[in-house]
Image: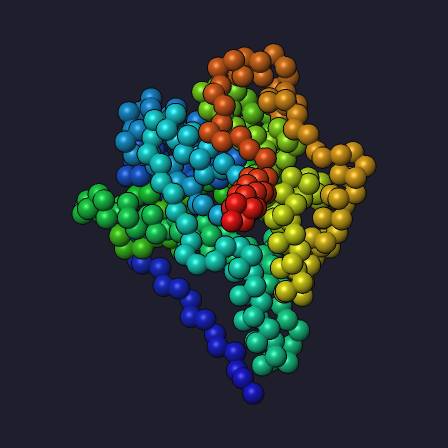
Length: 356
């Protein structure tokens, strides 16, 4: 018989404050040592970055600003990392990429299943779900939050001994309109888990109260920054192509755009003996995507600017497009490139064999 081991509560350094020094964005920018802008490459990150960099420039504090992108590998949309870097370069601020060691999301899900199954067998209980979910977002902690904290450690080392814990303003593009959970988040709070005796991390959600219209209006006001083409394909979320928090329509569209990756998710479903979402399997998603392709043909991308037009109208969109460069990389899903490479490799092999 096994006994459950209780986790000891994490100790928080006594130097870590309970509440932030201010809730005013300008005050926080003035008094912090680093402004860390988390960029997924999506519209909210882009709007937040443009807004904060504009404030920092007026305050003469651009030297404090770092944009960080957590690279998720092949589970995110093609060109996302390159776009985040392009946006940071056009904003004139430092850019950093972090990435978790080891497997990607699918590999971690399979490994997690093996551990959960062994635990369930030992305890005589059902196997817990291995996939991330709204109540178990281990993907965020493993693939984003953890790697970003390693960057925080580097930034602390860069400034050396200041005579006080290094103050890091960790900026997130989370909005209340996205979900009830995010509506309950504080616009400013101390991240006690990320803070220690050498650093105090304050979480700032500067666009927490913004609407979709506000976000697109901010993007239109900074036309030198291109937005990700996935929005013009019709996607409403970015980052992971297949996010467990995404709507069914987004997931089906993603499966039409990335059938190869959708097949990998479906295979992982079989391996971990659990549907991708509690009420929606990837097998169902891919079947619906295939049916739409048979009925309507391959999905066609709408003209550039379609997503912005839906929120701001054609006039503002035309103005934006006249001044906006193309994204660094505008591609269909990576699977098309892989198929072309495989076809070329097969042709080359055929020619070599024919010449022998």
